[in-house]
Every structure is written in structure tokens, then in C-alpha cells.
Image 1 (cartoon, rainbow over the protein chains, first blue to last red):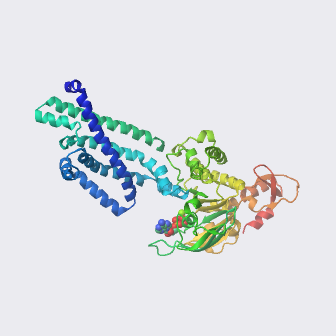
Image 2: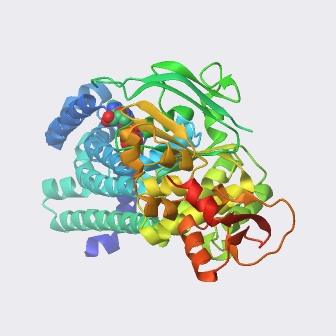
Image 3: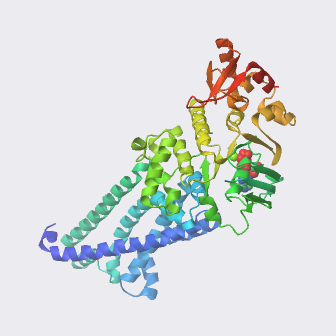
Length: 206
Length: 316
Ligand SMILES: Nc1ncnc2c1ncn2[C@@H]1O[C@H](COP(=O)(O)OP(=O)(O)O)[C@@H](O)[C@H]1O
Ligand SMILES: [Mg+2]
């Protein structure tokens, strides 16, 4: 604990790096998952195949996945972010599809029948309606990303993992504890704030 | 103005043994309330959804005001000019009543002020006080209120043509009668062309100017409620509408459909509202010991008269 108070500048710098990794990956993953989920939604076979692939990728241990990505992206934050994006995909795509499936068919029929274009149906009806489910997925994703980003320190991405690995190699328990504590706190804060957002957005629907 | 003409409309769905619709010819005059009636699966919804092109026919044509809706007409434009109400209401749960009703005006880029006053006007029309309901979400209303909003939303862009697919099907009997009354009143004011789907015979008899009866994808009879009841084309129609049940018929036929129009002033004795049924008229005649009743509209203006003979001659 005292390490945190004695070295606020180091902690803050690593914390910031960690936040950028996790949130950056989350945003990129979301921007990919929404169109991907929208596209494969309603196409039974394609959905099975895509979710199968994403599910398999999710089971690869993080260290292994990052090592596999190393030759493609080099020893830097990009490798780590790409790995995080891959892990988030299964969670996000699955939620996008679940959200779209949960929309009552009559709602989409009305939207179409009233003369909304596909794009208008998506932006005005589908996206707002799947938002609570999507945010639930983002919440889980950012927690997973926060945890896995810790490994990123080994690949030159910085972040709070740096404290852990330094602590282990130097035998400094105070660093290990400070690092783990801060990572956990960060995950909790992410979780709570997105939970709040999720609740607020879901309100008029019930 | 909006006339609709179905010409030899055929619709086959992949994997079905018989066509869902098999050569429908039907002409709907402007300003008429047409009910499509028939048992479940006979093709009512399919026929309706072809008018706003949610389905495309396998062959045949549909013309609105003598213009084919398949020939060079923009489908998005077409849909915005046709009101659409469905059973599950299809209200958007994340939007308030006001936002729901404003959808088509916004799609048509009406100025904000015009849309706002239109919303209030429509809420008044469907008997939902604007100040109370404007800001509500669909989940904060009863089924009947939701469907009133559904009707208001369909009217928002002031379409000449309105399609309604079992709009009151999921609503309890008492509220349903209420909604039917409101719809009749509204239609008397607006004179839209309405295509209304139901499998409820009583609802069809009460609402329709003309009923189109479908069976297994074919049109078996097209006529006024009275014609359908008194001159059914075949046993299927006769059984469907219960043509031999006279008491029931009396309960479903509106007074105004058989009254004799008022020629001159004449004496006014007992009055009856134009939407009341013949059964009520008969009972009023008996109770009042008069030989005729004066039929009036909602403003108590006399429209015509009705006698025992009118009633006896109207039913089988
Ligand atoms: N999208 C569809 N795909 C395949 N068959 C359909 C489809 N829509 C309707 N049908 C079939 O067409 C027939 C008529 O259906 P529908 O028009 O919904 O009947 P109704 O509204 O009179 O109950 C039914 O046999 C139904 O199963
Ligand atoms: Mg139907």
C-alpha cells in the first residue's frame, strides 16, 4: 500500500497506460462487433461458423495468443491491443446478436412498413434497443481486457502489469500488491460505471 | 383519394403446396372501409402486406389510383404514404408517445412546429389527452391505449390509405368495442380508404362498408355486411358469418346502414344514434311504442328514420 502513496506518479502513469489499453481495445472491438453482428444476424449457418471461430480464439491462453501475434505486429502495444480486441469479439458479437434477436418482430415490421430505410431502422430502432445488451457485453469485455492487459507489460505495452512483473523479478512484494490492487480497483470501477449506464438505458423499456 | 385495384394477384411462398393467394381480383373505392375476413391462414395478412410491398406478388398487379405500385414507384416513398397498424402494435418501446407518432412526419421532414401540433391533434382524435400521454412510454400504457397510439401514428403523415392487420385482436372484448366505436367515429370524419384485416366476424360486420371474404387464398364473396348476411354465396360464407342466426345479425348491423334517409323535417320522436345496432333499435321501438325512430349523428342532427319494416326487410 505505502508504495502507492510514495510513488503516485509511477502508479498514475501505469494506470493511464492500462486504461488506454483496455478502453482502446474495447472501443475498437465494439466498432468491429456491431457491424459484424448486424451482418451475420439472421443468417443461421454463418452465425454458427463465426461464433465458433470467435469462441475458439477466446480459449487460446493470452500469452500464447500474443506470442502468435508477435511476428505480425511486433513487440509493442499493437500486439496487445489486437489480442484484447480478439478476446472481446466473442462477447460483443454474441450480445449484439442476442440483442437483435430479442427485438419483437412486430417492431421491425412496423419500422419497415412506415417507410424507414435500412439505415434508419438501424440507427433509430435497432441500435437504441440493443444498447442495454451491448453495454452489458462491453462491461464484461472491459473487465476481461483489464485483466488480460496485465500480460501486456511483457510485450512492451506498459500498464500496471509492469509493476507485477518487476515485483516478481525483484522480489518486491509491495510492487506486486500495489499493482494487483490497482488493477482490481480499475476493473471494479469499469464494471460499476457501465452497470450504471446499462440500468439507466434499460429504464423506459420495462 | 385512394382507390386500390388488385388484378389477378397470386402469391406463392417457397415450400408451400398451394399458393397463399390464388388470383385475387378486388377493387376498393376511395374512402371505403373494407374488411378482409376469413379463417386463420387464408391469406389476409399476405394480401394486406402486398399493398405496402412487405410482400411482392408472384404474378398479378396492384394499382393505387390506377398506378401500378410495382412499376417505377419508390417503395420507401410508397410506404410513407400508407398508414400501417399491426396487432402487436409495433410501437417503439424506447420512444415516447410523441416520438412514436412523429416518426413519419420526421421521415417526411416536416417542420418541428407542424409535427408538434399534429401530435396533439392526433392524440385528441384518438381520445388520449395530449398533456397526459405525450411523454409516456408504451410500457406505461394499457393495451387499448397503446393501440390508440398505433392508430394515431398511422394517421400522422395524413395518408389517404390505411392498412390495419387485426389491430384490436389482442385486446379484451370491452376495450375492443370501445376502440371499434372510436375508429368508426374517426372514419366518419376522415373518410380514408381503410383495409382492415380480422378473423372476428362480429368486428367485420360492425365496421365494414364492404367485406371481402377469403378462403384458402381465394376471394369467395365481396359485399356489404347486409349482402353477406342475407345473400351468402355458399355454405362456407353462410357458416362463417352465422347467416342463419338472426338475433346475432341484428346485434351487428348498424342502424345507419339500413335507415331511410331523411327527406324533409318531419316530426322527431324517439332518437337513436347511427352506430347503434338493429337489436337496440328493435328494443327501443318496442319499449317506446313508436312506429319509427329518428336516426341521429353524434351532434344529435337527424339523418334518417328506421321502422319495424326496415328491420324485418333487412334480415333474411
Ligand atoms: N413469409 C412466409 N413464408 C412462407 N409462408 C408464409 C409466409 N407468410 C405467410 N405464409 C403462409 O401463407 C398462408 C397465408 O398466411 P397469412 O396471410 O398470414 O394468413 P392470415 O393472415 O389470413 O391468417 C399461410 O398458409 C401461411 O403459412
Ligand atoms: Mg394474419
